[in-house]
Length: 212
Image 1 (cartoon, rainbow, N blue to C red):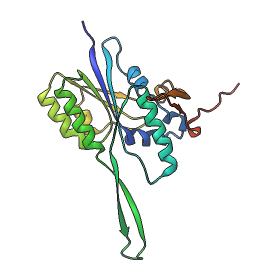
Image 2 (image 1 turned 90 degrees about the vertical axis):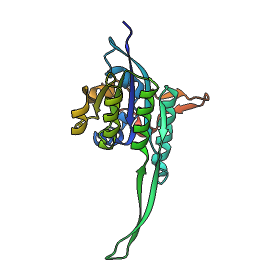
Image 3 (image 1 turned 120 degrees about the horizontal axis):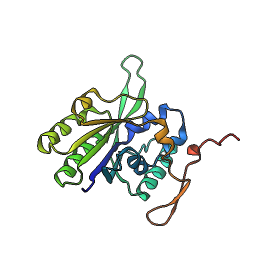
């Protein structure tokens, strides 16, 4: 009997903030393809697609360099990266007159919802794993359950964070990413990019040295 085709959709900022909360910077150099393969039941499913959704923080140069390196590393391992954008607006305090610039991530939830729906209609997967807690995606999931009742939805909670209560009502299955799973799925220190250029792990993501 053929295995079910499994697709993963990662909400990049949702995952990033969960990893940041662990205070273990090396875990951010995470192989999403390896993680997907670790999480699926390999006896019954095979990983067919991994898509990562994010946006570049162009207003934070240091983070931008690391983020670009990470996206390049993901693409080198066969992960598709879909980029949104940040929108900024100038805000003024009515009381003191101070002014500052506020940045807001845009398009990611829309990009995820559209992509999952499109992939369902193109019959890319039998099972889709959503790594997010953004309830704005619930309408897309409800539509897929109506249009494609045989396609399974698996809600995946990020490390040490709960599932969306709405997703729990909709999910056929649930999973939780553990710290142990993360530590098993790190990208190598160096890897060749798409055009042969070497991608080097940022120094901030170097794993702690083991004690002897």
